[in-house]
Length: 356
Ligand code: SF4
Image (tube, rainbow, N blue to C red; front, side):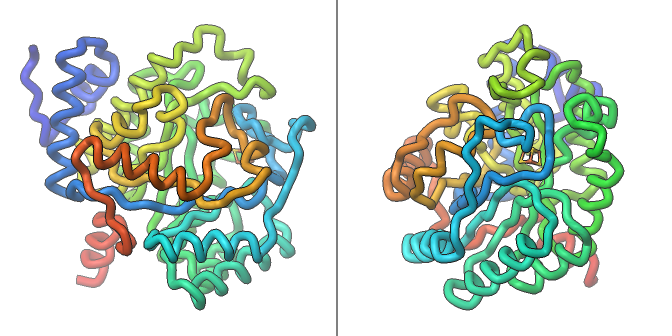
């Protein structure tokens, strides 16, 4: 086996590791990434209680099940009271962090609704809030930051502009997305991004470039997952050779290489991994992830928030979901950071460096 300098992988090394199907080498990769995780972020997993509060979206991304052009989707938006009920449940169960996710809307009614919800969450429960609401103006980011959001996840989806173009309609602009990521940093969010892994036409080098992109843009949190087809989307027809096992393996390699290369960032073990393998969540954590996002809302509408096919645990209660996560995490000998926000160590360091 070739000797790698795991602490300082070159781009060529990473492309080789991204391309390998040597089982021994892959296990070594995951083990090395796990060591780095323990050293930089520890063996505590932090929960972010997730509420997908609306599936109404003004965009038409070619891979997404809730794209505006999918008229088979029953649209919904939870009320402020329902969202606050979930925030209370999260608070009572010692989740110190909460995630609000929805389709993208930029109208004032939506912006002020989110703003109002954020103020209430801050005043009543003091939870750390991550938003995942898409591209907005800098002014909107500022308003939401002031109202209580501290983290924002805006996935670049692919750092290769050609692939970005291939998977989005014409009105989605790569440069605008880059600008939005910069605006989030300027408004003092912990900035999260991520990519889809295993896209059509995407090479091992593209994926490694995605990791270099995370570094170059000084990203604090990573939320990425294997691409899983949604049958009612234009992209479903592009994925002729779709192999779930391969997608899962690519997803784990990306987590491991990102951990090795970026070291002190937060990385989510996403539901997409769990969709491809019932032990996917654990495998993600063992490959270097340290964040989990259990769903904390109970609603008939959960079945209407399907970005891809076969999303698991749609009918579990928040309590059942929490227990399932606890079981997975304890099974691999890790702890849960109840009552602790688990901010990105990278963000903390970035702030210290800027102030010092
Ligand atoms: S990926 Fe986001 S912005 Fe694109 S269609 Fe889906 S919900 Fe809307």
